[in-house]
Image 1 (cartoon, rainbow, N blue to C red):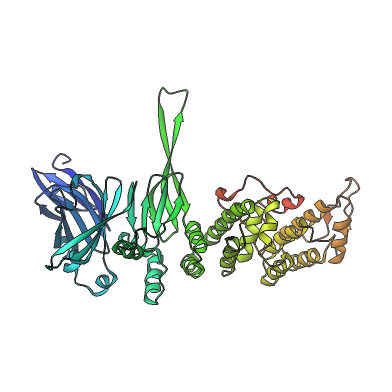
Image 2: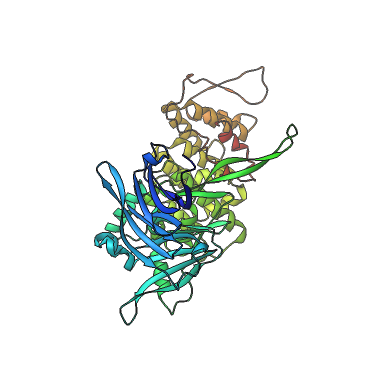
Length: 506
């Protein structure tokens, strides 16, 4: 069976259908196979003969297939369900004679249709209005259609990117995810911020993307504008395989060379890696002064359970960069980031999480653009976020804004006791004990909440026993802030004694 045909022009998936460009019996054809059946000639769902060998096949849009052959012809098919099966229907073709000199050098292919054509256009006219992207060697070439004085179709060519390994148009990605639905809703309401129209280019080191492919088309067609729009850089330390738009991540693999003494050869071990691309894109928008766009894009991802972590990554990176560079107030991105964070309910938690993973010397830079820490502490108490309030208590102490047995500590301890969060009570007691080894600070705070300390004469120094019920905490907020990805851990950690607040809760 495996010798009956040879794949000559790549393969691609359309839902559960495998599309293969094959050579069989010295003839060239497209074959459709179901994922549920074997690659047997008797199991072929549909066969489409072709006059020449295929260079590339790729899906585009919701139900279209592009096929580029060695005759320098681009065929446009659509998938048409018929009686429980499926077949290909050809709608048109484009000849690129004199435009693409060597079809064999084409390594990638996609096209971009005008929005009006996507909404209510005749699919048979797609070939006449589509802008075509060819990856020729390592150059990404854009071909835009126009008509000459005689009314004949011609193409204007422009190289829009160099040193390209592969490119991805998000318009060609599956349209079933939540983010895509939200993107369509954004378009219908007039919003113009959606990654659904983005174009991604990988150069072997990082992804570079244009958020809106229409900006690229307008710049390429404008003869007076020589430069292309700015791209957003997303650095990677592994090889990307797929951009999951709905998840906000880039999925890829990393290869580790394994050498062992008990075997005479080396081998590679592959591991799956992911990278959040949202922080890089938001930072670009904020740097360019597009704060409204950053907020609108963030709102499309706010239902992800790790959305707060993505914003924390953004804050952490910007703070690390600006604490040493000291940009002018006009150029500083940190206040714009904090303004963005304040648009979301996780704002207070994100700031506390960031302080946990940065050096104390960076805190003053961070809080220079924030309300007083006392106000953030009060707001956390009002929201009932006791663990977050505990984090701000550490910051108050570290910045020398917290007095001995302060009112804030007593209030937080009293609130934690009322809500039965004995884990937090334990951490608060440990925090106060770390502040004063004589135990006077802890004693004073306990007296403030009408609790007595029972001295253990067998132990010296700290009074360690509280007369409180032995019960489990119920609010589940956890003073460990949040356990997120190791990529957020800074090499320099806070050396305050109050760090036991978080470390013991882990």
